[in-house]
Image (cartoon, rainbow, N blue to C red; front, top):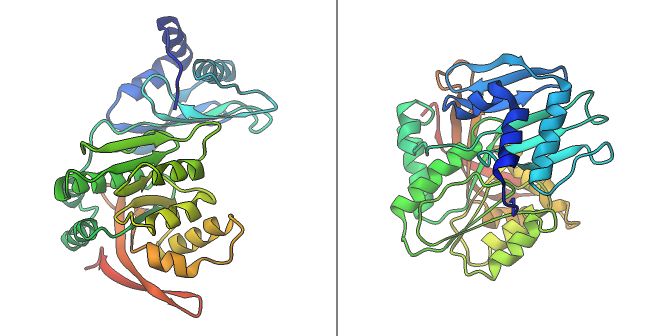
Length: 322
């Protein structure tokens, strides 16, 4: 999270370096991601048209854009440190940029923050979920089950998580203290008793989870778990803080639980099968579907029942085919 104040001249230069095409995409409610490839082609992803090439950006302009963002955020990007991970000062969108030698020419990806919350009712109206799936998710939230939302890149895990958080604030005790942990601020919660924290250069997700346990949480929500912090999250959920929600990159239910195992084992512990079975209750799997009008659907809502001989046992609670 940026702690630096932005001057008008900073923002003016940033807008100049971004260019009209990128600025217009940032203003468009239809466009969700902005990507520059090393070949200089700008690609946009929109809700209405999917992914398409939208124009070009010269390498010198892209390099200036990356350096301006880094400077405003008090960071740096060089040949020795050719990666920039931060938020875009214009609107706090998630920003990932690279320079040579990591890529042939400068590149970046901007994941825009949602301006409005899509509810589970919106998902139902668009056919991304069915009625049974909505009911099962709502029941899991009310019963304070720990929910893991999985899917590949760009499937809409964060947007679906925000929809679940919206349900949480409607259905549950408003006095519950909700702690939200992220690398960049994307989750949105309208509850009154909320503590939101983001990682920084010196504070990683594991550190945030340790801070959280001293902050009197009722529910712990995590934007995404990418490393050994998975073990800390499992322990946190399993120490009197049920009803959490987190996302992981995984293509399906079985892959999601295996991903939990792999990440937790990065903390140099044996395979944490029992801990996962005690802690993760429900897995919601969302995936891309080019044949679907919305471009994605929730494939299944599944309960993790336990394990036998190191193999996990699942029960589908609601699938798209139901």
